[in-house]
Length: 354
Figure 1: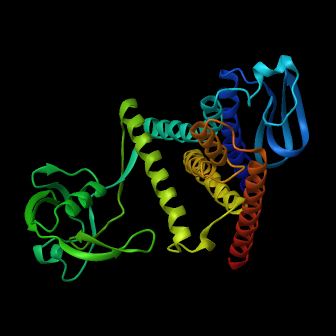
Figure 2: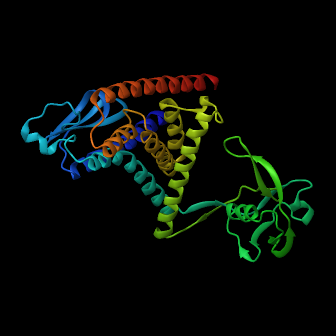
């Protein structure tokens, strides 16, 4: 049951927010909206208000906003020309198309803001777990259970802050302030250069002292201003990692079999439902950022493809020819269909491997 609930909640929220972005911006620029649909295919429920039909459709793998004059070759009544999407300035059309992904980013920021403000920020305490034999830390006398409270006179609050200070040292000796059994101990440690694998499996040089975290976690309560800044930082970090992941997949650094589709999303959403509302909301924020970036890829039929065409139009001073757009869209549809087949295959193979 959690599998179904998670899938419906996650996809429902993401689709609604994305399409609502297009809808709001279209309304703001005076474009008529004929249909606002959650889902594709046959409609299950529908209600018309004004000239817009709001509908719930049978296939819950997307949604759409149908605008007046959306197709360049569409025949319109003279009375509809002021409400036509095609007849709006190119910058307005670009903003309408871009607003879907932008609202996905807004959703992530809002969710993270709420989590950080109400629940606080979870951080690893700078408490030493494992100490590698022969490491700079062991040679200096550091032991399991030591808590790092300062480096070079500056206070240390969490593990990431400690790791950053060590990395920034570039091998220079650091003065550590340690709390051990209620006593404060000072020791000097010289980080060493080591080759480690990053999250993409690539080798990179890092300065380390040879210790691992104890895994102890603290929750730091922060105010709304700090929560907002932290939400922006978290959203930006996810954007950065997502873009890097896409690049690494094309470069072959990340196996293509790791790419997941709706089945994987449903499985993960079900797990988040079982873990609680905060975990589910954080998962929605993560997928929302991924959806926003995916839609900004310059692939015809995606939002990024439309933005590309409008950008070309802005440069050359006229719309891209209808024939060129049709060919590009057919290629885009083919690529998306191949991607869907591939991710479904990955999901099914992943399911049977368990």
